[in-house]
Image 1: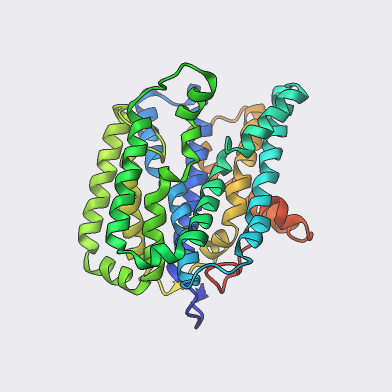
Image 2: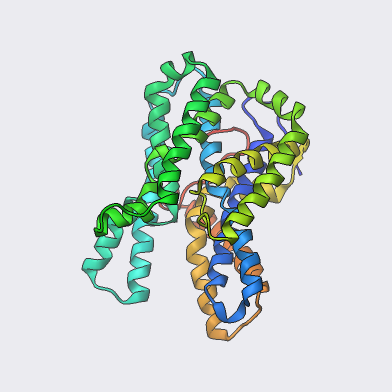
Length: 360
C-alpha cells in the first residue's frame, strides 16, 4: 500500500480513477481482439461481450476528464507560459512517435507499399489510431490557456449546461444521420473524423474545469447525492446496454448516451475511491504508467494474439484475460526499459511521479 503524502496537490482518488480508466481501455481492446475471432464466440456470448464493450468505453472520456481536472486544480490562476511547450515534449512527441510506429507495423504486417505507409502515417497523425485522445486533450489545453480568464468569471452551471447541449447535439448529428455527401473524405469524417474536434467532448472539459476549481465543493456534492448518483449510473448502464444490443447506438464512447453514463460512472467511482485512504501499490503503478500503457498495449495485443494463433491456443473468454494481463505487463516493461534512455519518454511516454497531480 502507498500512503497518501501530506501534499495539497495530491489527489489520491485521481490516481485510482486514472488506473481504472486505463484498465478499462485495455480490457475493451482485449475483448475486441478476441471478438474478431468469431470461431470461438457464439451468438449469445457475442451479445453479452458487446454490452460489456460499450460500457467499458467510458475509459477514454474519463482520461480526458482527468487531464483537464488536474490542470484546473493545479493551476487555478491559469496555465504557466511554459506549459504548452512542456506538454508538446512529454505528450505530443510520444503521440507522434506511436502514430508512425503503428503505421509502419500495419505496413509490414499487410505488406503494403511505402506510399501507402506514408499515407497511413499522415492519417494516424490526424487521429486515425487509438491515441487520438491526445489531440482532444491538446485542444482543451489551448482552451484552458487562452480562455481561462473568461471561463473563470462565468457561472459554472450556465457554461456546463450550454456545453452539454452543444455536445449532445453534435454527437446526435453523427449518431442519427448518414454522410450528406458521398465522398471518401466526408464519409471518413462522418465515421471517424468527427471524433477529433473538441466539440464532441466539450461537456467533459467544462465539467472538469469547474470541478478542478471547486474541488472541495464537488466532493461535498458527491457525498450528499451518492445514492442518486449510483441509481443514475445503474439506470444509464442498463439503458446503454439495451440501446447498444438493439443497435440503436454505436459501440463507442462517442454515442450521445455515453455522456450521461460516463459522467454518472465517474461520480460513482469517485464516491468509492474517496473512501480509500491508502492506494494499493499495483494500482498506483498502473496509474503512473497509464499513458504509455494506453499507447503501447494495442501493439502487444496484436503480438500476443498472433502468437496464440500460431500455437493453436483456443481459450475462449480466458483468452481475453491472457491478452489483458500480458499486454499491460509487456507495456510496463517496455516503458521502464525505454525510460532508462533520455529519449525514451519522448518515444512512448514517461512515468508519472507519485507525489503530484500533474507533471509541472
